[in-house]
Image (cartoon, rainbow, N blue to C red; front, top):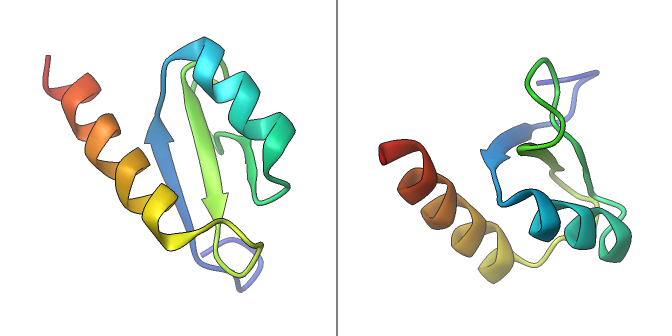
Amino acid sequence: MLHGERIANVKVDPLEGELLRQQHPGITPGYHVNKRHWVMITEGQGVPDDLVRELVIDSYRLVRR
């Protein structure tokens, strides 16, 4: 939790991360990680659940390599 909000850091392709940050106010540069490769998703900020699931799965694939 960050300031009482649930958050998740996920790894993304840097170009995709930039687009996501522009499109969704609830997606910001990662907290305490490389801000080029990671984004932070904040609960309750309008990020659709299906997008969160997709980002978690993609993050797992990127980290697992």
